[in-house]
Image 1 (tube, rainbow, N blue to C red):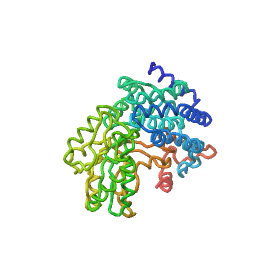
Image 2 (image 1 turned 135 degrees about the vertical axis):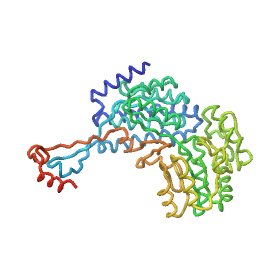
Image 3 (image 1 turned 90 degrees about the vertical axis):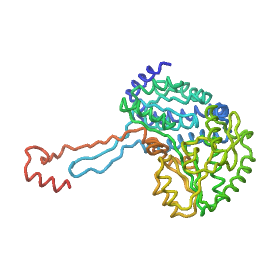
Image 4 (image 1 turned 60 degrees about the vertical axis):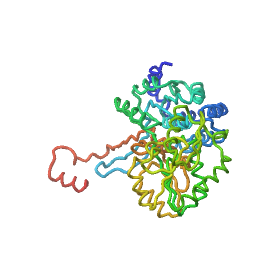
Length: 455
């Protein structure tokens, strides 16, 4: 595939204006959903091969969320596309003001391996509903899923409109050198910096969905069993290879032992006490990451609370007694290791979290509404939950995105439409009245009148 030629064909096709109408966008969204449904069995098989995701987890955390995103768009798209009528200042009388929702044009989506289908197609829905053309480059790490995505896109859509491009860093570098109108990237902060640097050469706007160390706060007022159950779920999904997984646990020192007891009980209930041999527990993406997680466990071997076992492809869910200076707290873990740090006051929690890089997510388990609101108001983070984790991603009405090191820009639901469109402000000044106050020659009288109007 000649990537540059595809890019040029998309530029030319966008200028035909065929992608602009509501009817076209609706048709393409329906076509995308139908194509996914026809290939759903292949997707489930591919997700099992690449990440050992069970069919329930694959549907619940990837395919189902895409269906929901498309359905939500089809329900609201016509209203989103309408121009907004806004107020007009007296200085521009007589006139009306509008905001048109203009597509960016030729866009690109670069997606990661941890949720290879969801994090490719969910932003693609935004590109389609926004009236753009799009080139997508899925991860080369999940080759089976990428092949199904290629089938879904390239067999159903003309490459001048949508195109899936396979390849490694060489292809990524070629794509990043092209003059796209918008780049949407999901991945690590280090690669995100490189994407942003490339985009700067063409002054291309970017959406960066990155990651970071997302704290999970457990206070003594919470329902401890619910907290243990939901935190285990949040950390076990995709074996912790989730950008919004609880990265470390901040727990009131008075309830730590009780929490660990309940957490162990939940492991027996949810996983029969076994991760390595459990057929439904996802695997780590590759040998490099298995070794990385093994090294973290080895560095913390004297502080293990539970777990610590590893195989060639899996890492057992592991709890570690930690402090903020522990090795396991240096970088985002991106695996089934959960450091446990105690605290004595909520002030301590707020200060410690704010002293570090802005996390993509934050979770707090508490029955004290004032305590919850205080954390949400005083700590900077992308998005999060009270008394749950991860589940904010299931709500299309909530925006998703990070701040600074955890990203820039937002999507999901209407935010996806907003992200893939430009608000074009228009002033329609009428001609039946043309006041001379703003024209030369200027005078004291005119200035006084202007000062009365503009203040």
